[in-house]
View (cartoon, rainbow, N blue to C red):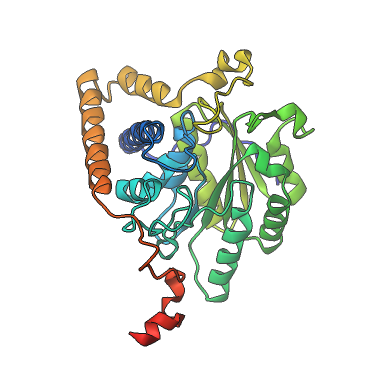
Amino acid sequence: MLQTTEVPSPLAEPSAFRQTFFAAYRWMLLARLLEEKIASLYRGGKIIGGVFLGRGQEALSVAVGMALQKGDIFAPLIRDQAGRLAFGESLLDCTRTYMGSRLGPMRGRDGNVHRGRPREGMFAMISHLGAMIPAVVGALLARRFRGVTGTVGATCLGDGATSTGAFHEGLNMAAVEKLPLIVVVANNQYAYSTPNARQFACEDLVDKAVGYGVTGHRLDATDLETCLRVLNKAVANARDGGGPQLVVASLLRLAGHGEHDDAHYIDDRLRESRLGLDCLKVAEQRLLAEGWADESALHGLENNAQRQIDEAVATTLREPAPDPNVEDWCALATRHLSESSHAE
């Protein structure tokens, strides 16, 4: 069942694809500028905890978010800001969680990257080590038991996560049950600082697909068009009953593992290779070359995105953090079971 995909069939007619490409670029740009602001706030002491940037991964991430529909499940990773925005996350959800506002989706109670809105289909990240695969598999099984059809679940992970037990157990169960699961692996060549050669022996991670009996796709994640077409195809396959889809995308992380990491271990030859291309710049060049936008239009997009980000940050800075002396710390979904609710 191995299907290695290099250039899938077109998404739609040229005009529709042009609109999709342009929309994807806007989400990528917004995500890049948002994360640059988050990094700046972190360096300025306004954010406590870790900051992990998706620089270089925006094309893959946005393609996942745009391929999904309302009602689907999306379990993003720490570098999936572009996909989060495309799937419907607001700027305030991001800034409020990073800065600990009690008005955010996690009410300032959790780590600054573990945000989500499960009732709306966006799962809060448990871990970047493959743990979200079993979580999405469980949710898809629950939907099957309830008779819900026509939806899919997608989760993203890095190459290092393919070496974990959760990856094996979750993908194996999804394959046996033929669940509509899409697993997107961002092979950024390093599991933190461990290179691929010291992590797995197979020639290509997509080769793992045949061992599980699932459909495999490979792509160059520096190219936005390829990302959009492959993810659209993989999601459509899963939605149409094709079972789990394993998408392996090749790219290079254009930043450290986190803002605390200078990425000194990354081989300069990789930086200078095609993998080292900036997907945002590649997409921008495509827009200009095709005449789909000019420099003035792109400059306007950047100014508009920056204005939205500045407004979200300014709003968040005015908001309170949780007060441990008065906060009701019970889980939000079980508030009705807490003793304090009975006393009210």
